[in-house]
Length: 128
Image 1: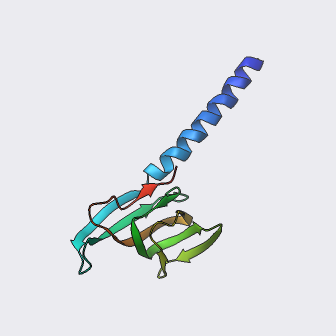
Image 2: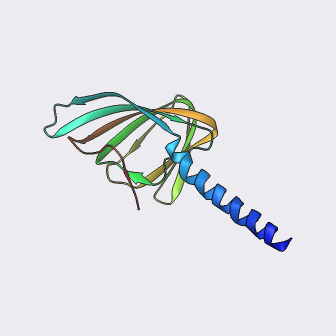
């Protein structure tokens, strides 16, 4: 009987860990455009991020500035040890190279992000 209870606890822990890892993978990112800018060596990537309720990007950085607009729902941005919630119709900015996390709060959310980044670099890099 005790063995069965231990197995259930371990199984529940494994399921919770897998769900936490998969949640960031459930954020659907769609690149809307990727174009050169008038700034040599820079490009703009415009992307749509669809967050499920509670979905989080995980801590990450960008090789340039992020200028974003919350099109639907609400997103909590965690950066420099503090957080702020941005709701539908609000915009936010993240300076390039600054580690941050974004999480859908109050239900699903949609963010339209513009990244002014070094040409040829990945728009997002996870922080390990």
